[in-house]
Structures are given as structure tokens and as C-alpha cells.
Length: 295
Image 1 (cartoon, rainbow, N blue to C red):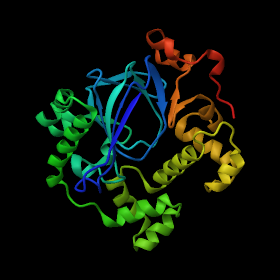
Image 2: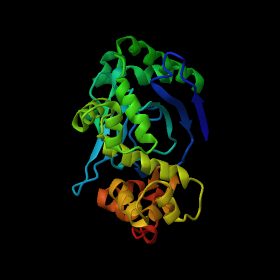
Image 3: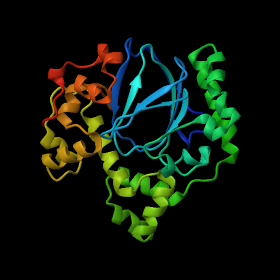
Image 4: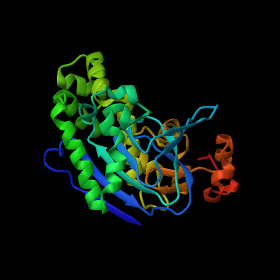
């Protein structure tokens, strides 16, 4: 497995959280549930010119997009197919600061994906080809960096009140307290936050608390869920379990048992059957007996 992480240049440092090249993560195709996150990301598939996503509703459908996309902020889990021989470039943007580069309201792409061609026209359509022409991972990351820098002159400045709000909610401050500190009516704060971040302040706070829990249990084989719940501001273990199930579609115990990487859970055979795709990627799924949903 090859992973190369590039620090963004000073001009992008306020907008870009990380730039990563990753290859050789797995040899077989799989479908994986990806936990929600409130950041926006840019993805380029260097292996095939396609991404495949599955709808989470009761009438599952597959959605195919070109191999260079923007992922909007997500306040619920999603299902994505990861092809064998995965080779991806990704850019994770700082919370609330990707929209200026892409010049579209983030709530429009909440829980959605948009091709770069639709966002940047001809420049977006050529992104993947230009990256493939670069020889090394470092060179590819540099090309991607230059593409982002080219968009920067068009970017308006972010709302400083919302940057303050994001940081305060990350620390666990209640939404009403943050609005009061900013001198804003709750509905005004909600509207401005939604305009810049793409999710409501309350939903953002729930997702970020979930991510803090996921970070806290990384690499831990057995977890004291009562202690985790208390540490992260849940009323009790039942509150943590219910919130986890609502946002992820799994219990914390099921996530812990079946995670393949932080924020990734490989779909069970039963789940793949529901998607109607079990035969094509059944070589990389869990046994039926492992598909549990209890606490």
C-alpha cells in the first residue's frame, strides 16, 4: 500500500485540510458503508474513470459518475463501491471553506456528488487526464494543487462568524450558546451556517461528535461504551447507541466489529443482496453470520 500526503501551500492552507494519494489499499472490489462527515472533498479515481454510489433507500439504485468528483458534506452514511487495485487522489477541505473554490452553495450538494466537469467545465473535464499524465504521486499531487490554485482568485472570503461557530461547536459548545456569543438570533445563525457549511448547526454538532467517538475508539479492540458516552457528552450509553444508529445505520458495536478502516464498514452479504449486486462483488463481503445489528 502506498500513501503520500502533501502539505498544502500557504495560499491553500486556509482552504485545504489535506491532499492524499493512496494506492494498493485492497486487491478485490468491495462495497463499503462510509460514515457521515461534515467536510467537502474532491476525489479522482486514477484506476478507472468512474465512481459508483448506492442509494440508501428501500429501492436501491446505483449511481455512476465520472472519475473526478466533488463530494458534498454528508450528515448520513453512504455506500460506495471501491474497486480492486484502488488508486485515488483526494483533497479534504477545511470545514466551510470548500464552497468558495467551487462557487456553489454547499447545501445543494449535501449527501451528493458532482462531477468536476459540471463545476469547472472544460477545466474540470480534463482533471483526471492531466493527473494521469504526471509520472509520480508527488507530481500528481502538485498538478492537483495547481488546479486548485487556479480557482482561488475567484473565491470570496468566508464568513468569520461561521468560522467561529464551527470551532465552538467542535469544542462541544451548545448551538444556542454559540449564537448568543455571536450576537445572532438562532434562526440567523442557522441560516448563515447552512449557507456556508451545508448542514445545520445541530446536525453538524452531532456528526462531529460521532467523528470524535470514532477517533477515540480507533485501534481499540474492546470499548467501554458507557465511559465513551460520558466523555463525549452523551446522556448515557443508550443515547450514544441511538445517535450512532440514526447517523450510521449501525450500532457502535457492529461498527467496531466490521470496520475495515476508520469510517469504513464492509457491507455484509445480506446488505449486498438488498443492493442487487452480490454476484459481482461477493468475493469481498462478510459471511452472512457476521451481519449483526444488535448492540
